[in-house]
Image 1: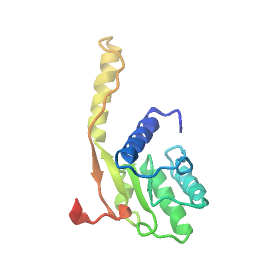
Image 2: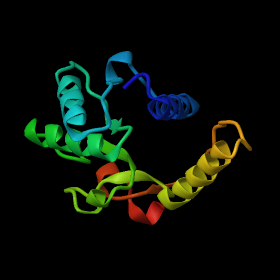
Image 3: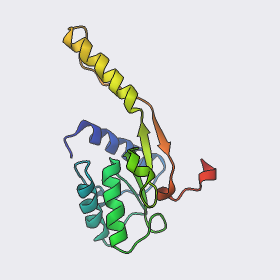
Length: 151
């Protein structure tokens, strides 16, 4: 979903991190979806058809990451030994997938409260729309292949 503000921010953050650590990033490895499981599945299938597949995948949502896990399994590959997978959002299903999904967690309660305050201010004419960012947390699980003692 190229027109989504959140997907563009996540893509920029991903690209910045890849550049910061001088990691290879090919244009054909960037696939677009709609934050749903089927789009992650189809995007991963397209990526698996390439001659040179990435060692790791960062999906802009956990649902897309779960779809990617399914496509990887169907291709006879293993996560994390063949491809590592990381999602974003920390939905409850991450704790029950096989392997359990590494993800970037957001404080949904804080985001909800901030949104309510901002909406109230807009209704009362006290504020203009402005971007607000909250902290996130990396939740390390099996899908990234990292040793838990490292974190």
